[in-house]
Amino acid sequence: MPRTVIYPGSFDPITNGHVDLIRRACSLFDTVVVSALNNSRKKYAFSLKERLGLLRAVLKPFPQVEVDSFSGLLVDYLRAKKASVVLRGLRAVSDLEYEFQMASMNRSLWPRMETVFLMPEERYVYTSSTMVREIASMGGDLSAHVPAQVLHALKKKFR
Ligand code: PNS
Image (cartoon, rainbow, N blue to C red):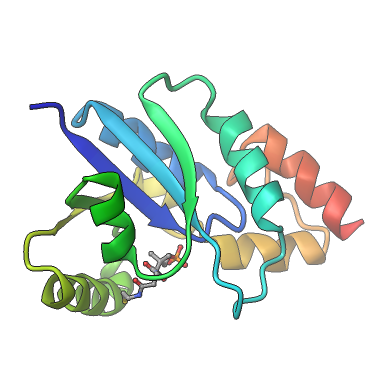
């Protein structure tokens, strides 16, 4: 049976840490659906259109990857996609509490679903979209943390 994993996130913007995780997922699953959350109550630096554009540009070299978006509950989206496995990254122990809570809540909403965790390469352990946005707004060098297309988009957004 072909195996699909859904990688949900804000991707505001996608970082090298996300790409590293997606590369790993491609060796484990047939299809990796990278899906950006569209939460109307949340303020993003990049609009959904911009986030999807960056995801598509950065993930073009990965034929197994499908870029998508969702709103509402993740479990409802999973059922609509006929998928039951979710991918999340664990960078450090500090991620664990939030991820454990989210995976447990999701499983209580839909017991059939599973969350699998992958660890990024060590050099991305401290990379986060939040820090990327903050550093970009202050003109810092992010070339080690984000793909070239994102670097360009950040420079345009925060110039
Ligand atoms: O990149 P992020 O912001 O850590 O991703 C969080 C995300 C999008 C995976 C999470 O907020 C989510 O799944 N939201 C959808 C709403 C939902 O299902 N909430 C209940 C699970 S806690």
